[in-house]
Every structure is written in structure tokens, then in C-alpha cells.
Image (cartoon, rainbow, N blue to C red; front, side, top):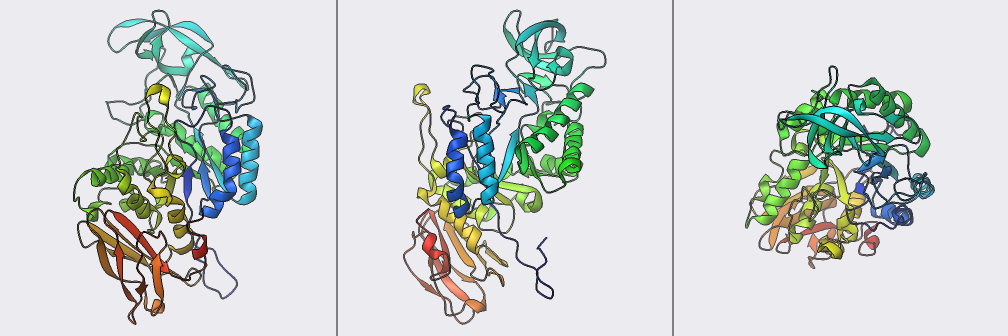
Length: 494
């Protein structure tokens, strides 16, 4: 809700916020990423980035692990385990300096919480387990948490390796009343098991340990939110308790978002409903829509938001174009042609619905891995992604007027508000150069508008009725704003 101003004054317009996923899969394993992000925070804030989703900062199975191969929740780069003291991203001291700097500048840090499983056990221990069909004994894992407890076989519901014969399969751990969680996604019948050793959130010691970890993490670090990894695969009942625990200990101001990666809008909406809309989900259907539109000739842009989360649950949708799982060469790779990236980012950044998340790999480029024949990629959007973020921060306010009236060329305008009066007009095309006569508000009559991206060189004078004829190049986008609006001098310099 808009904040109340001085007595008798109108409510202020809430400032647009933008999140950034602050890593890509191939960031160097040099233990310096926390330092890189700390140095980048001031520039990101100036660009319009308000919150950063940082990678899993808990100790992984090795010093090169990205953290989804999680070993110890309580080791944030503090203890000498799995080949090093720091994580891939850096030491705990570096992490705390990053958070301190971010909080000082006004950038929130969102933690990536991997709560579904554990990896890289210290020891093996025999226990009864069942493979997909045959019964057998699985040499299971013992995890030693530096801070708290030793995890035993009965703390898990399944694993993916028989240490006795090194056979990889899915094994369900046997025990009195033990089974897969029933409050998980029903894909594949039951999608409790994902990878490594699957935590059993029916066990009271597991519940207590992870709830305590959430409270400890919040008090220890000063983060402002959490991204929950792989929520399709672990207990909804436990996650509700985890969220309630956060509310009890820290109030309701934290931002919480879950990775429920599935191209099924009904399933996503049902999950939000079961979770009482306590947090947001990433809009996976929108990413697939971007992919289809970018890879199909003369596709119909008017359908871009059909059957997407942001269309039906705008307050609980985190919109995005790419992430570490969908980037090239990754397990959930989603192909989006380079020409379409600026169009996609305009669609998530400059409209009124959804909470946009910008990808590190699109902002800084994807490093790749030549040793494994994995190609590197330059920053997307021709280097204009910072300008699109800044346009959101400065100008994307007020009533939205949509012009989704032609298959290969669409547009919209934002009229501005009393405290953000400048407005904008956006036109994009996935085919030939396009143009739209659009209304920006009669208060803008006589103003001269130009494209903040610099891709469309012409000028537009708003007529006496508040309309302008706005152009864009072919397979491109133009973002029109008053030529001398405050902040225009900042574009092209970020």
C-alpha cells in the first residue's frame, strides 16, 4: 500500500523496486564473488536495483560447488570443511561486509535457501532402503553440522547412491512409518525426491534443526528475504511452519519467493492458495512464453501474457527472463533469442504488474567454461539493460494504457503520477519497424519525447489531446520519455 504523507496530503506513489539475481552458473570459483558484489552495490543501486538474490552461501560439497550441492547450513565460509574455509563465493567475513555495505546503501539481500537435501556426507552407515523395485541395503550417509547436530539415516527419506556398490538410483529409506512426504508436488506421482540425500520433514529433529537455522540466519546476517530452492520437492507443511517462524521472529517485512518451476499455471495458483499467498513464485510460464515468441517467426506478441502467473496473480509473481537454471547449457535451459531480450526486459520492467528480477548473466555476461566447451555470452540487450532498469525506477508510474492491437507490434504508455509526473511510452516489434499512436495524458501536451535507449533517432511532439506517434526499429524496442525529464542525463552512462 502507498505510504501516508503529511496530514492532508495525498498518498505517495510507491517507488518501483527491481530485484537482481546476483550470480550465474559459471561465476569464477575464486572465492571473491562477495567482494565483487560489494564493489558493485553502489552502481547497481544507481541503476535502479533495490534487492539482490545472492547465491547459496552455505558450505557446498566442494570449494567449487555453487551451493545447491549443500553440505552444511551453518557454515557460511567460516570453517575448514570440504577442501577450504571459504565457499565458492568467499569467506563469511566477505559475506558480512557485502551485507553491511548493501544495508548501508539501501539494497536488501535475499538468501538462497537450499532446504530440500544434503550432499557430500562425511561417513557411511548401513540402513534398510528400497530401490525403485528391488529391496536392498543402502550404505547411507552421515552429515556433521558444525553448529548443531549429526544427521543420521533416519533423518532422510531417500538418497541417490548405494555406497556399497556405487550404484546410482533412487532409494527410499525404510523405517517405522517412514515414507515420502505427501505434501509435495504430484508430478511423477510424488516429487519428494530430487537429488542427493532427501531430508525427511516428518522427523521432529529435522524440523527443529532447520527452523532454528532460519532464525539463526536472520539474526546472524541481517538479510531481508529468502528465495526457497526446489519447493516442489519438500514438505509444504514444513514450509508453512518455516514462514510462520520467520514472521514470529522478524515480523512480516521479509520478502519470500519460491522456485516452483513448472509450466502449469493451475498448479502454481493452487500452490499459492495452499500457502495462503504468504510468498511469491517465479513466473516460469512467462519465460516459456518469451522463448516461444522469440523462436517463432512473426509470432503474436499480443499473447505474451496469456496463461502466465503475472496475468492472474500479479502481486505474487516474480517476473524474469533468464536464471541460472535456464541459462545456456543448464538443466532447464530455455532458449530466448538475443534480439528478443530487450523486448522481454521491457515487458517485465516497464509495466505495472509483477516484481521483475534481472539476471546477472544478462547484465554482466555469462562467463562460460572453455575447458568443457561451454560458450561465453556477452551482456544482453546490447548493453542497454541498465538503462531499462533506470527507466523503470524514474518513469514507469501511473495509469497504464495498453495497445496490444497488432500481432507483431505492441505498445503501452504510463501517464505518470503527481510525484512521478514524467511517464513513458514503449513500443516493441518482433518483425518490421513499427509505430503506434498512443495516449500519454493531456498534461504532457507540447512536450518533446525521445527514446532513452537511443535506438530510435526521431523525436515526438505530444499533441493537444495528449497523443503521440511513437516509432520503434525492427525486431527492437523504443522507450520514449520527455526529452528534458530529470534523470535523462544518466542514461547511456551506467
